[in-house]
Amino acid sequence: MKKFLSLLLAIMMIFTLAGCNNAGGNSGNGGGSDEPADLTGKPIRIIQYVVQSIGNLSCEDLVNEGLKDFCSRTGSTLDVFETNGDDKHFAEQINELCSSGKYDVLVTGYWNLPEYIEQAAIDFPNMKFIAFDCEVDFEAHPEIKQNVATYSCRQNSLAFAAGALGALITESGKGLANEDKTIGFVGGGENSAIFDFLLGYIQGAHYVDPEIRVLYSYVGNWSDTARANDLATDQYNSGADVVFAVCAPASFGVCEAAYNAKRYAFGVDTDHSGQLKSSHPEQAEYTISSAVKQFGYAIRDAFDTIYDGTIVWGTNNWFDFDSGYLEMLETDMFNTQIKEGMPEVYEAYQQIVAKLAASQIEVGTAIGADQAYLDAEFKKADPSNN
Image: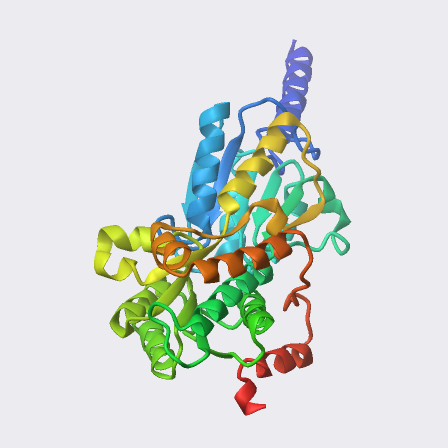
């Protein structure tokens, strides 16, 4: 009898250990397989890993809205994890979210996330990862081709449109434009994405007129509205008719400076004029457009392809003007100030945008460019100094 009980206990222990092994591991969808689950036609459990915070008026807000739309149509669920700009714990936070077993797909983005996405995709091969505004290295990590896809917009082309519009305004002498052929640019930080914006902006301005000056400076962060205000004020005082704010929430400091100087501003990422209508309506009419990479639509559409089974994993997807995901918003202020107030400017601008959409204009990029190329291009910003 004792021998029989010992044998029975041994068998039970074997099955218990086997059960533990199957329930654990790198599961992002509750299973122990190393193969990503087929999510076709199924509700998807999504975690959005937010580098800043929702409500910060960045691309992450657009992505959040796009994901909500997808969930409402498919019965999928969305959780949000916000880091509030603290990059010290990216790796451990992403690891914890992936190992929780609560999610099928992790969504995140921006230029400083690829290495964390690559490592997580290796460590959790049964989870899927959608990244925006960045790309991963599939050649260095071929094993992640089964569970990662990225989506980026060519901000250099979008900035080219902004530069061309600014140049047409400053040359027109209409509205609030002065006699100087000068426009400005205030970036948040010095990184490849901001350089890409600046490069396109300069080339767009010089496509209209090579003699236009493009003043530029950097806040050094993404939140200091006072610093952004000071930098933009200096540019307005130096003759700029339009300043393009590419510094996330700090961009509202540029909008305030435009109001004080009675000049024009372009926002970024979201409709700054629309936001100002409720908070500072007196400033809204001076922010006449915003350059928006419509990641909300792009990521929503990407999830639609997961749901219908047509997504191609292992791809870095880049969108240009013909995609419809790049847009200089034609807001109420744009319609009043440009479309109606400067019809000749609007017509010329529309012709340039049409050429961009038809790939008839080649725009340089800072992505992957060497420093010598960037230095040479940025030197062209102020032709009077060359």
